[in-house]
Length: 350
Image (cartoon, rainbow, N blue to C red; front, side):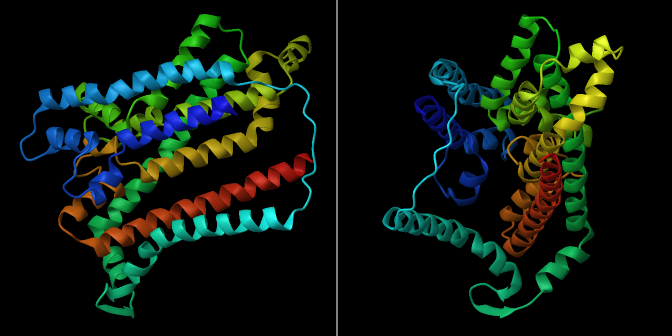
């Protein structure tokens, strides 16, 4: 597990170094690279030249991450013979692990408990009696509810487009006779998108499409999300396709079917669970992302996360927590629905 643990450390460091949402909310007067970049690009006195320099600095960990991840791949060992070992019961060990897991779970839930409490009381922490006034205010405010509808639209479209793009890319690398160098290019793109900060991607899209018909439009936000989160869904698809029988295409060609028909009739039905997981991944991340879209969303294409940033500036925390509940509830609902279909599909295959 040395390679996996080291790769996890690299990814955690990279995500913490480039994260914007948490420092912007609780960082106070302490600046990090991400908040400096935001202030340079969208602050009271924007300076795109200085912002571009800061963005280049944020790419330094990306380059280091790519080099380290490529180096750590040599420690990944695949065992052809896997034996199942039944873990014996040990009351002391099981008790310690149970207590540790419970403590971690309680700590995590305690942090998020405020999201459920604040929107449902009159005025935290002075008037703590139950009320739904804040929820009603958000539902009755067309601008706020419209932002929620925008987020749903962007998330669904991102999931659909991202699903098609990642599935096509995975088919090209795992189930086609494409040139090895071209397959390597697709793998390299996946590795690069996994390590480039979302803020840098957002700034790149902002500068490239500035002055074009795509500026401040939903298609641009959707495209940015697809690129930003391409890596993980692509790897999920490629790994699942690699596990399928490699002789299906050969058998189908002998029976008169072409490659496309084989993919549609044979391969895709066996990929249903992974397809639903990829859809879920794209949908959830499109609902919660802020780092990239904050630079390319306009007044009419604002999504919940960018609206929350605006509401934080005006200290409207009741609306912030209600919108956060909308995000959480929507993502949980989607996960439950898709999880049901995935479980049902897996039960049929047994």
